[in-house]
Length: 257
View 1: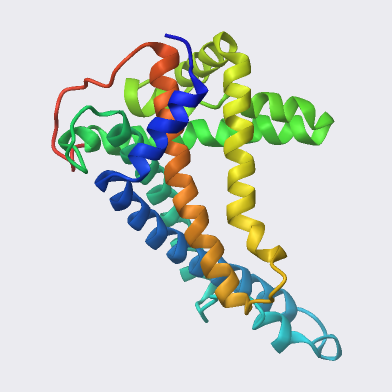
View 2: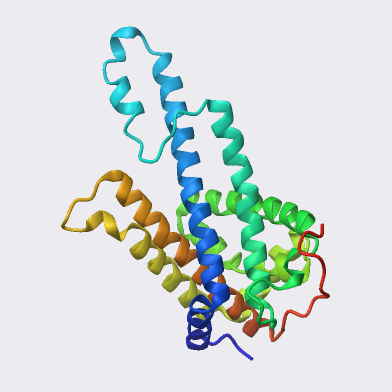
């Protein structure tokens, strides 16, 4: 069965409105808010470190600059840095678990098999993410278009890793193959999801009524988190359609490595 855009979005909406979707939306919102706090704190710590190296006569605006980041806490640079690294790992784990849950035929909100080999899978996903990000970044720096093409070709890498236990190179290769076989549909899907994320995640900045920075950041984070869950559901459904497969891995403990 070829990738059907309308069906993918309809199934994605159904998943988002289900008990499973609500559970993941809640988890991703909590993660998004925590991530915003940690990254804002890290940014503030770097700003304070930089300003501290300047001559005293150049530090007039130090307090205003260091204190102008919404949600930032006064954390030591090392603590904020470690927190950011931990959150990157948690982000990959959440994505893997969500993909497996949305691909599962089990109607339980969190199926038992979503934690299968999670440690190894997250490690593979991180390495693959680094490689694909470098490739996309180089492509964008060179001529922009190659970077966007790479981003499209790598669209299903996480699904390959989460559902098929694919390795780094294998997941990238298989994603390229799936996308090229469904190029137009994948392109439309990626564009719609990207626009949706931009509009709901950053559209509040253009409201005619000004909002306090903290409120604006919080609201944007909440909506971005919900859109992320929806995007994972839609992309996973689309992947299953394009590969004509179903997720039927053996059940394992949710904490299994």
